[in-house]
Amino acid sequence: MAESDLYPKIESNLPGVITSIKDVVKEKLEGVNLRP
Image 1 (cartoon, rainbow, N blue to C red):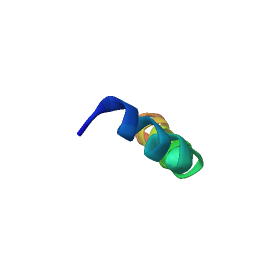
Image 2: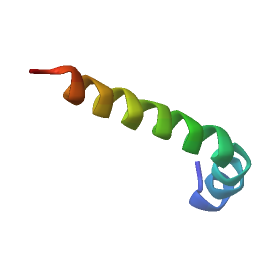
Image 3: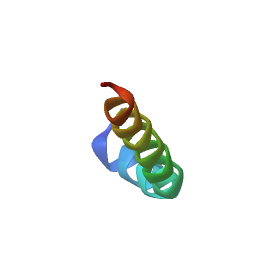
């Protein structure tokens, strides 16, 4: 797949991707905070 084809797909999915990343980061941070 050409990179030029990839960028529009990434941009159209960006809000969902950002939300997913934020959720993962939040889970990791909460996991760290829960450890004694």
